[in-house]
Image 1: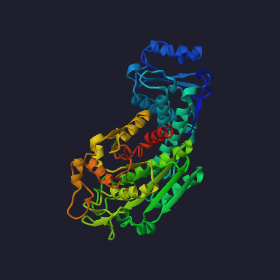
Image 2: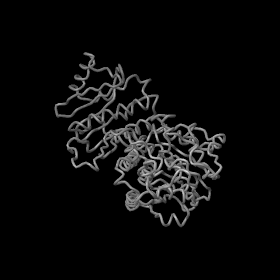
Image 3: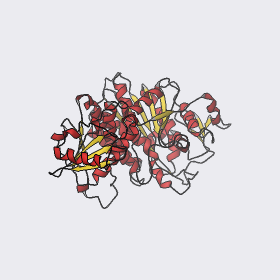
Image 4: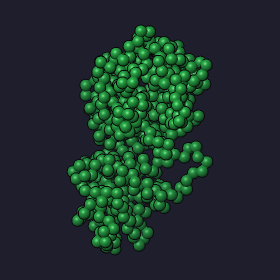
Length: 488
């Protein structure tokens, strides 16, 4: 689906289907007033017979003589319209419209006037929810759905003040779709080599981008013992994928993004239960997040320097696999006692975070589907952010609110660190049952000392279920953060 902005009025649009909003019991709707007298008469008849009154969740189709369909979407009471409500209303509407034969659609929900939501947020909500609703995964299907039942072009109504927000949301959507593509592909396809090849295409197709890929021999020579320990049980050798985007002066320190890239996680010797293990293909959604954000940043030509690190590794049980009880020497030189091989994400991240510091970044952000405890704590509504850098969590929180892709801060108090103490190494790789998400963050903090750094656990937000698959979260939040940083 191509997404374009338009400043055409409703009565000027030639789209097959037009979407407009209507608040509950709204007396005067300026968009309805632009319709032909015949269509206005249809609408007033629906109101008179109580077929439609603008209640949230309602939709009403009006039919023009030329075959054009106008879909009026109920938005409920203006004072109760939230970002979630608007996102879900548009998402549902686009899904319904996509099942019709409308190839071109004009969406005027961006024209609503509401005190709760500013115009830029409304634009981003409509574009992001539209792209999300129209996305289809068909890469590994032999039978593709009929293209006649697919929106080819979506025209989004925009005024002069919303155009920048439109371009940003469009780029975010491209990044979200890239992340969903990577997350939804099966692990026999999306392995470490696949991610490296995917990154190579990104570098080839975008200006000011370059790629470096370290293989397992190079990482062994460098001493990345923690990362390599996780991958030593797999026939798919680890890769360290490093994508650089140079959009500013060379003297400007880069923003470093690190994404957990476990392309499949069996748990290793600490084998996971069989039910739902197939969902562990999503354990590389941290990698998908930073790659998706990279795609969007390059498309927007942001005036920043960006460096993205993806440790791509498969965690498998094998005669060569690492074991509970092993003591591993990380790239930093710190030693780690392995108590659980299923706590593998932090093992690959710790070496990558150490490596990232060699590029003298201004800030380091890592994203990972790291702990099931995060899902217990926050459910599927918000990603968890942990940092010791004052103001950084707030910056990420505000970026999330600007695109309705929210994060919530958890503490990294020193009192939690003692749960990682062991008699046999500098630290152990799990901290026990209490505060599992926080102690994982504490573990990573030991490899980011002196850095402006934040850890974002996306275990509850990166995918929904087998039907919906990868969500592409929190790409939009991260891109908004990069946009905000580029404007400082």
